[in-house]
Image (tube, rainbow, N blue to C red; front, top):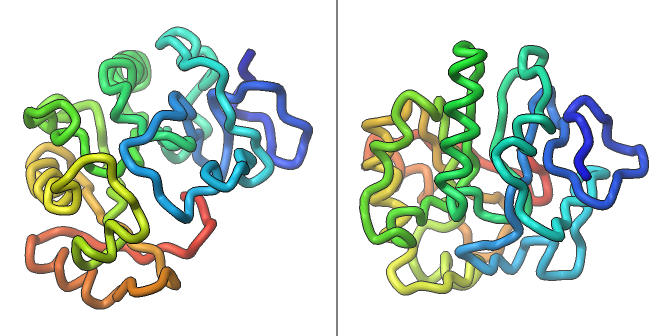
Length: 214
């Protein structure tokens, strides 16, 4: 079961939530699987409630279920793929949802919050597939070097840090707005160094606060 995105945080959520509203956006929770095992992720501490929403899924929703859960996208600033899993692990589903939304509501702005490891997972450059469907990417950089990245993000595959940076550069050619983020306050994370690394690659950077979804 899912709820319309218009439901507000603070009310008792149903067992499974596919779409939820925060900051005037409609967020989509389409998987619990992850490429990373971030030490700061609440689910690795047994906590699945984010901003009043219980994001634990018992199964991954199909495209039509996601579309129904969104309802009318017009009231929202953005449709954002972001739950407690990595949305690009369901890339076909993600793009099918985006395609249907754009077909019926061409002015809808669609963002994907991602770890930027899709190319590493699929072993090919998938960024051209995002063109015309995804308006914005927010990529979790989380560290200024591989050592600090491994400390906090605990990637399942080697070479993840460089793969994330490479994905960001490639995606910048196909998506209008690409920004990398890092969480201020995590041990060893140098926010200035993160920003400089992005500037060197012609990428935007955004500082995040710990435990603030957005």
